[in-house]
Amino acid sequence: MRLFKWTGTILCLIGIGLTSLNVYPANIWFGFVGSAMWAWAGWKQDDYALFLVEFVAVLMYFFGLYLYIFNNLSKWGI
Image (tube, rainbow, N blue to C red; front, top):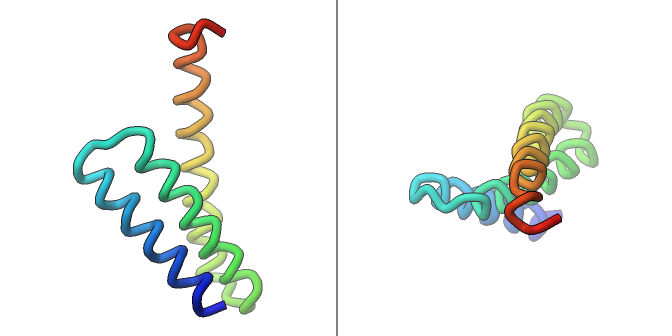
């Protein structure tokens, strides 16, 4: 679990760094995966405050990814 949480932390920090550099949509992908890992860790450790905040972050990241993909379908020729 310790390595899992550290991996999630590193991914979230990479996502934050990419956001500060305006690297889109890679920032959302890193944040999405890192927050999903932390949400899972919170759930497994019965830390529901951690689970809730990270689960909401995952939902927001998912919505952002959905919008990115949906808005770019025509650019990709689909």
